[in-house]
Amino acid sequence: MSNPQHHILSVLVENRAGVLARVSSLFARRGFNIYSLAVAPTEDPEFSRITIVVDVESAPLEQVVKQLFKLIEVVRISELDPQRSVERELMIATVKAGADNRGQVVELTNIFEGKIIAVGGESMTVSLDGNPEKLDDFEELLRGYGIVEMQRTGRVALPKIDREARTRAPKGKAS
Image (cartoon, rainbow, N blue to C red):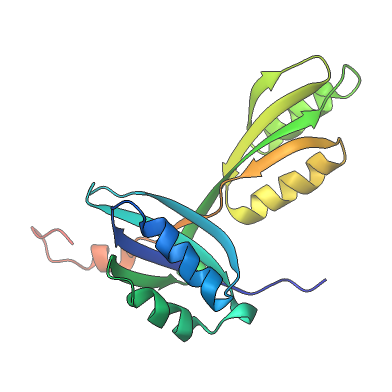
């Protein structure tokens, strides 16, 4: 199975009702495949950041960006290079975990630095946050126990901090 190629777009938009609906309908109308979509307000309550992971095979990146810029609420679009950005995702999963294998699920969750959220008679709910590959690995191992329900948030991402520029800043001036 080939691994799909994705572009990660960070789209800064005005924080107004209906913006997410306009962005997602733009993708639907054009037949672009969204692999992941996450949106939340930024440090400035007037703006929200939408992180969109787009399937490269469904649309050329330039076409996606041109279409997004046609939306009046879009302020800025940045493509994030996976090598120069940090990505995180959250997963919550309910897993079959009876008396015979509960300890194994707890141990696996601890190894991945996850958390036990709820415990029932024959199942437990766990959560894990981290880079998407870590969640993929955890999910694959959980499947061996039987996943009852699962939800992943989709990726959020920001550019990595440029430490090189910070260390070269003149004394007395912040970068």
